[in-house]
Image (cartoon, rainbow, N blue to C red; front, side, top):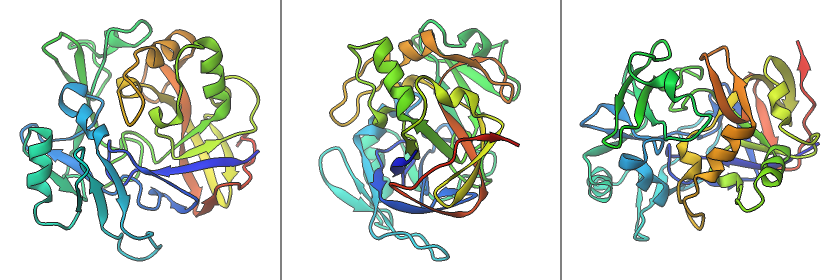
Length: 299
């Protein structure tokens, strides 16, 4: 059982880069979600989980100008704009250019302001927990509003279960297996279940058939030289359906997951459409493509 690919996303919600190896600490893959776009008007961290405002972030891509090294400041990030132009994160015109391209006043930031939150929209797809997220019926600790379309929008604390001061949505590592993607392809043969839609950090192969990650929460394992504890299943959202690169918009991506793999998640409450699993780092180390991983074991 081996690591198929590794992925980091230097700027939250932009396309990222695949790497052959990475140091991994309690803050995740070195350089993952190092930066984010901050919306000045709403005071939230921008996320493509609200497509009306931020789907355009997926038209950008980000990569480090040099390989990050442990114990040293992260290198600058090169951001490629939809028109093909490129700016570095230290360019003085970056915020102005991002604001013009996105149509809102934004800043590129390296640390979330205290109390930072991000928003997530819930489309009308059977199997999504819209009733749990509508105003008056919120998961504890969230707030909500509605889009003009009537779709409810939930607001969550940034990195609620991850390392403080980071830009992860919930947790530090996101792990996905080829088994899960293969199962989704069986369930909906006409739909393209591409790993890029799911934005994992670590892609694994060699597992049993089906949604194998469903059984991993609460267990420990190793991936390469890194110890991990799997925490809870990864809830899927509208972002998986959005157009990016050569992938078209496709609501069946989320609809299939919602129909066939809904999991109860005690940490946040409710039953969710899931694919993949979140993990915390229990032992720092390095992971490389081709490394072995051990099957999870209950502690």
